[in-house]
Image (cartoon, rainbow, N blue to C red; front, side, top):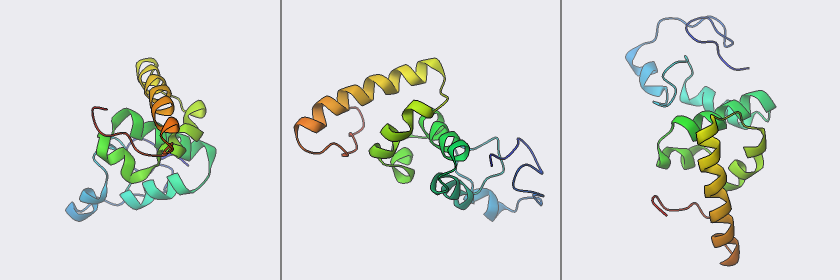
Length: 118
């Protein structure tokens, strides 16, 4: 379940974070007390709500290289219709997925992650 903003969210009581614990939180999750391990568990859970929230957060807030550390292009394509994204983010990703589909399916590598700036 998606953690609530602040302390004591869906993951139960959250004790004060140590510096080591804070470093474990991905920098694209600045507003929730979720460690990297918890974020990865959300992605792997298969739970519609958790997985779609996590992928949407990646596409909206993570750095390009970080996105591909957590998900594959195939996963983005699979989950994309279910993601709640800001209108401008959705439009940009729709366009990108269409372009990559045209270019990479033709060359036999439909799951190749596009290079930055491609």
